[in-house]
Amino acid sequence: MKTNRSNLIWGIALILTGAASLANELGYLRGFSVFSWELIFAAASLLFLISYFFNGFQAWGWLFPASIFAALSGTMAVSGVAILAIWIPTIILGAVALPFLAAFLLNRSRMWALLLAFILGIIAFIPPLSTLLQGELLGAFIVGAIGLPFLAAWLVTPRAWWGIIPGGVMISIALMIALVPTLPNGASVPVMFAGWAVTFWLVWKRNGLAWARIPTGVMLTLTCIMLMVTSGLRNYWGYRLILAGIVLVFTSWVRRPKLEMN
Image (cartoon, rainbow, N blue to C red):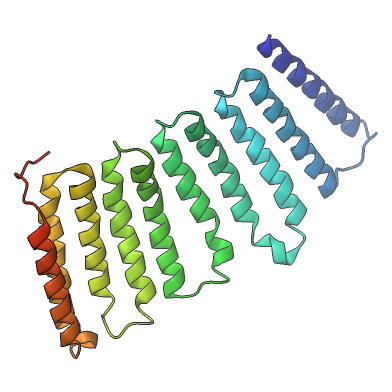
């Protein structure tokens, strides 16, 4: 019954479209204005959305044409306003991301859909943010945005333990880039290594993967080395000694499980 209703709607839509095309060819209709196309795209979006509801919520593929036609209608509406024109890529990419988000919400095992929705959604906001963020901050946002979907996958699905690795690595790099203008020469590099150490420590402690303690120790060592050789931190020996003491205290409280390459 749902299929028959969907066919009925699209049959009427095709008849009306064909009648309008025929009237245009015979000279009864003038060329369509921009506003007319806005209405046509909005109507097409509505028809696809109705078809989605008639075919059931799991038929999320119908949301692609529904959201894209809605985006086309919206972009035509704002294209004539200079201050809003920069949002056109955001509207279009956001429209493509929404069906993937719906696919994940309908079935939480579709982590690939969540990753795609995150990536497309974040890229969509890069053009307008480029007017607000400059230099290192924009670069930090882009790098961090790449890592966020993986971090979200790790937080939402325990089986996706691997997500914390690319997520933590990219977010640590983003933090390093963002701190470049505010810290002394090269002083942001130890922050990146410290972030990587925390990343593998979380893999070790939260997910019980003993092999992760090796990169954890390596990254902590690199953090200490970079603190010693970084030109902007050569005069901060007190801070280094405190950090070394914290590392020793931390390792004294940590159990040493049997090394298993899981």
